Length: 148
Image 1 (cartoon, one colour):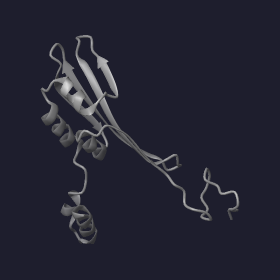
Image 2 (tube, rainbow, N blue to C red):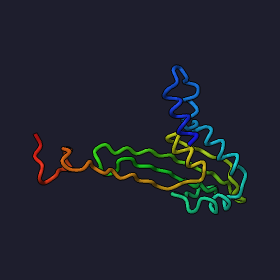
Image 3 (spheres, helix red, strand yellow):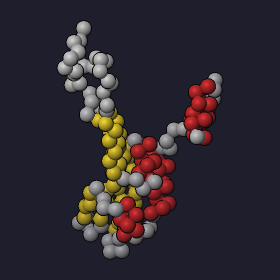
Image 4 (cartoon, rainbow, N blue to C red):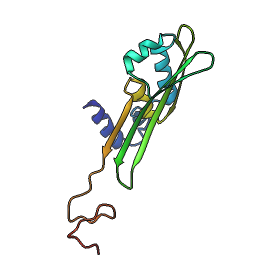
């Protein structure tokens, strides 16, 4: 509720841009720093126990392991206006102790913030077309409605 009130106040405020900036997701660098603070120099097993199986895992020639976690959100899925937003975090754990020695992150700031909170995975928001008789172009055509 407090976030909603801040958002309404942000819209109504004339020149209150500093209050509006607080609603934006933090930059990817801050999300990466939060991940490093939580998992830096920790055993790789701690990350796997907290987040589950990674999206991808690579073994390097020196025995080190790279674990990749992704978060993807699809808005208006299965429609012509489909938008995909994603973030990827890569953890490097050097052999033989397999402690996390580096974290890299890239993608949308909001998705990276959610990923830094430990929410990997995929989310799809399916588009629901408007009800009949609202005309909507292909692929959502209604059989009993003629377009002007």
